[in-house]
Amino acid sequence: MADYYLMAHDYKNDYAKSAIKLMYAGLFNAIVQANLIIKHGNENKSVFPNESTRSVIVGEAYAIRACCQLDILRLFGELPQGATIHVELPYSETTSFDEMPAYYSLAAYVKKLESDLTNAESLLKDNDPVFSYTFSALNTPTRKILDDDYFYYRQSRLNYWAVKALQARMSLYLGEKEKAYHLAMEIIDGTGADGSPVMTLSGHADIVNKGYKACPNECLWYLSKYNVKTVAKDLVGGADVQVNLNYLYTTKERLDKMFEGEATDSHNRYRYVWNKNVRSQYSEICAAILKYYYADDVENQMLYHQIIPMLRMSEVYLIAIETTSSLTEANQLYKTYMLDRDVVLTDDAFLSLDAVKEKLPSEYRREFFAEGQMFYAYKRTQTLNMLWGAAPMAEKDYILPLPETEFNPTNLNQ
Image (tube, rainbow, N blue to C red):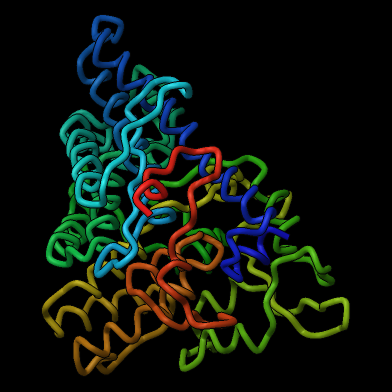
């Protein structure tokens, strides 16, 4: 029921309130845990075997705090530009749930975010194992290249390159386009320990060749979730032929609208990432996302299937395409992006930078379906009419209210 009221932006409904409270509590639980690591990591340096180990662990904690606090801002904060409704938000550096964190205006809050990400970047630089080994090598702990097993599987940690991507995401959200561009291109042009690109787009290789529909090999950071298939099945139905009212599926017409104007005969997201043979309880043809579905007998389930993408190279490319000041470069980057979707563009897709701006929302919808990205994209662009939205968006619809159990200084100023 909460999904319905959240979709309708009825944040005063009790179901919506409960869901918002759970999200808020989950984020701050992770933040407090990160704060504990930061505190003890900075106060008890002697407990670590060496400074490099301490730097990586504490750097990750700063990044986790920043990531969660950025989502607090994107959910509960004011519009990043041109706001008429202003909100003060808590930025927690406390180590106890009983301690009230300080509240900040948008500008002061952003400074806190930037500081945490700068700390994370400086601590991880040269200390993160990704500077000495490739992501692929670090996904193979049987090679015993490291003394401490904690430092394997860097894609499941907020590693150095994930921090750079998080900085790019934040900069784009705040409207700092030039900064976002340079950060995105730093990742795209970055080289790993073996001299090859740090990471590339992996849609064709993952989806078509391997059946990895969440594109794990282009994830700069993902969450490892062993029961993701079970959770997703209860939500979206996966490979089921028959769905029920509890599933979050879509209609065939809406799926076709999402891919309108695209080469669906070759586009690998349309061909392989959607189950288009679903029937509703009324025998209507529907579609269900397969991003988190996999067969029970597949190999390497933990590494390639039981994941939730958090930061992918596809997002990095879209950031670069949106923020470049060069129309030629935008077209070149987009051709690379689309080629990974098995769509060959012989002509330029964009005749102007305005055309780039008009195109990208549809790319976000297609690419990040079931990854929780679209609300933030709509919010930063102040979109008036969401696709399939029941009514035009008002500014207040983009600002989730803080849970009623939380101190809210904004109310004191009203």
